Picture 1 (cartoon, rainbow, N blue to C red):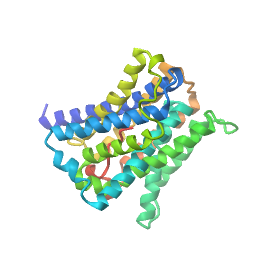
Picture 2: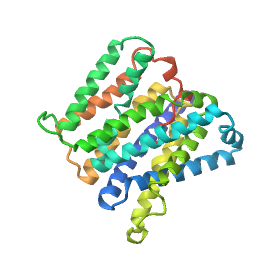
Picture 3: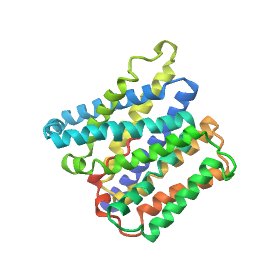
Picture 4: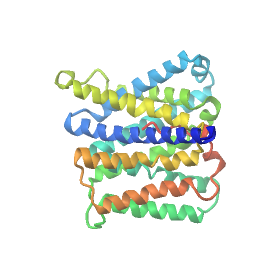
Length: 317
């Protein structure tokens, strides 16, 4: 087998592993919220603080301290980084976990995957054009998929709570902002330092409302603490590096398609492990929403600003 094929197989394995770890961490978070009474805001605070500190420390040890520190020297960079950390990173993390807490990991992950649809509309408006035929089809699939996902195919009632639906849609909106807003910073400094600082900023901000030391340690078991570490390390840092490294071997459009393993993993684990009811209507909605992501990743010419690996942060959610 040629080196090129080996590299592509390695890239596929990396992005699939990252997507499955992200999807699995959402299901673990649901277990922590609903069975171990872990507060979502507290978990987001700890996840962002620990991940941000470790990521920046890792970069500094790799002799990239100059780029880590230089991010703060330019006033424009500082303003954009602070806004990205509070609105983008903290926004996408908190709304996602709040959607899980109010509903379940499968539905929350799938609703968040409506973000690319919102992004498509924003790109069309910013370029002063109507969406292309492929994009209209994708939007239609997303709308129909959302209907089946949140109603189970029964239009008379919701299969999830209105609160879960609202948090899920907010998660999609913050994901779209998270993807677009930091493009200038990412091109200038790269993904790792920008995401590391954004995590730390988001964690410090939320710590004022959900301090990391305010946790019922006395009633938590060793298993609970291990699951929290799993969400923080294997649900954040490990998949982040796998995803970034996969971009050395794959096109961004390919990673976009393979990232559909995240909601699929979340759905399968939620049904199998946590017993979340997921009927034919919900599965049809899931397939349509995942199909939307694939449709937007392939076919047609992607806009240059959104099809470069250095202009998009790894999801990290």
